[in-house]
Image (cartoon, rainbow, N blue to C red; front, side, top):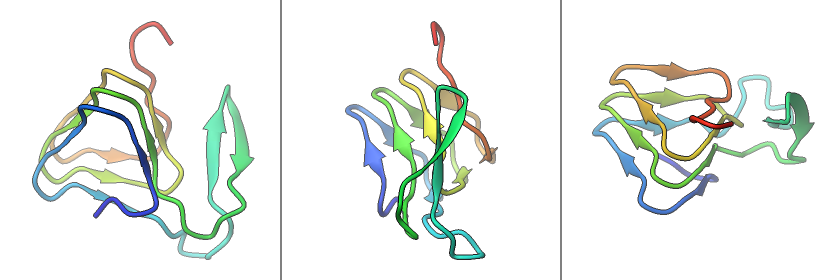
Length: 88
């Protein structure tokens, strides 16, 4: 499931990868931008994923996480924070 997300080009989701889009307390989802948390103003928001991101199988991505371009995420990982690629 990857609903309510912004996905770049040439991304690949390994089998069983899921993007959460609703916080348990149902508050507005925040996204980290330049080391600051910014509210999306939305209760439902998945992730922001740059171009050429690949996930292994069974990756879980928490609401509002940003994943910069050209990142590979190991199988079974839980993405709880922004993941910066090389050069960011």
